[in-house]
Length: 153
Picture 1 (tube, rainbow, N blue to C red):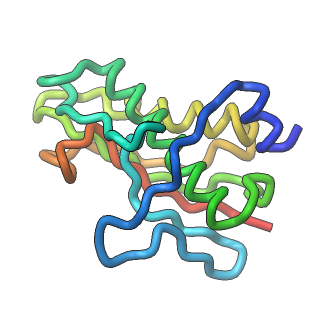
Picture 2 (cartoon, rainbow, N blue to C red):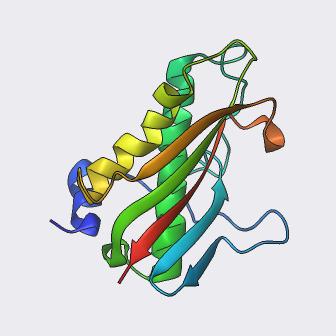
């Protein structure tokens, strides 16, 4: 099943593709790789999910923010590529969690993103190499920021 068909089957709603909030491109394509700039948890209404994990929000809220960030990245990829069916596989992901110094479950939070990619692109093509790290802060106090590299047709 294609990625576009999976979105429909899963009943997923993508937010509008976010506009750059600085001097950068949301996606840069080099050969058959698409480098996707850091995205935050943009909701369909244009608002962002905010709060430091371990202080203002809990681990589940962080997971939900990572999943929402994945939806924003899918919106950007669709906008840039014309269709998510052009994505062959996820290559590498960097997930950053806005969290307290003693919070240690960064991978569990970023699973929100990774599990969404596996649902949309499949268990092999949707899972790539990954890093999940904690940050002392993120822009606008967003809970999560994710960047990724995908292989495209």
